Image (cartoon, rainbow, N blue to C red; front, side, top):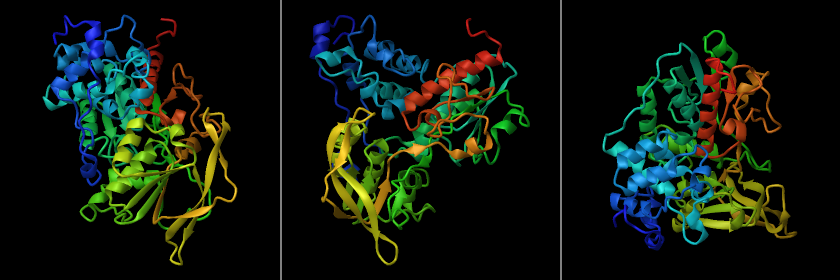
Length: 479
């Protein structure tokens, strides 16, 4: 079809283009990426579905306000490089966001086509454009303004830190990113499995920042290797952005959680994703031998899906999701739930763990659970799970993974007491500037919101970068 002459009625008649993927019975045994990406033909066909609204609601649904209508039109016209560069005016990590962002709850949710049809596959198109630019070797770096003489320290190399660093370096400030781990990327490398987000893509995106002049220092634990106060005084930084994430796992607080074979999702996924324990002994870090075993993951979010799908790939005979509400209340992305089911994951809904049971050697053997039913909605808007008295039973499991959320790392709070924190130990900020209670210190991402999305963290990083720039350059807030 000629994109210049296609009618709105013809656009409506085009079905949403299905993302090609590995077959489930093959992918559940390997760590290669599940989704294979659009071809140029599929991408252009999907792009033609966009009716180019005069007031695109999809942009309002994007936390960083990508010019969605414009980049999609460029794809429809066959200008794939132009599309990638249009996205990168607002999003420094398009290949990542195209893969892991919950578009169905953001930009695609507000697409006007959802009223009578299915939304345009905005995330799939974003991924296509970014991949095309990278794979053809035509990545174009943005221009960097003349040096301002100002230095900014960024704590954490996750999405918030990377987006903040990107904006600040382009504004002419010297930027140094301090990362606690030995590899850059934060949650993008330790938390998200290879089969959802290949780590080569993360490294490629970070390499672009290095070429712009961002300095990265690994194995630097904020609060131990260096404190916020030391960065501002001894190290001579003019401002600090804290994007250290939410890496402190929460536990169930039930008997038996200290048994061998009980993991937090953080530890389990870090061992597999960052340390490549699935290649043990070629890589040094081992992980529980799941082959032929029963593995239960307790939780219903995206991290729980990542953990249970990982266990299946490690050879678990039974890989369970155990969740105290129904599937309707699960916060995980629909695509992740769909993929998990295809791969053989078993969903045990309306069940709540009471106790972990072990043998004489202190190895986990089972989880005592209680069946639940749904009552009235709670403060989250989801129906509250209510116990069914007398419904206790023991689920035989060899390994358990707790995936019920995370808190912020306490080191910064302990070493910087003049930064205000909430009752949940998240850093309190002015949401308009991301400024903390400490002068010249800003924060954003999961360390402020608790566990959230990549794109929300990036939006916070960009907001902070703008505020930091204005403060350092003496630009009045009304200008």
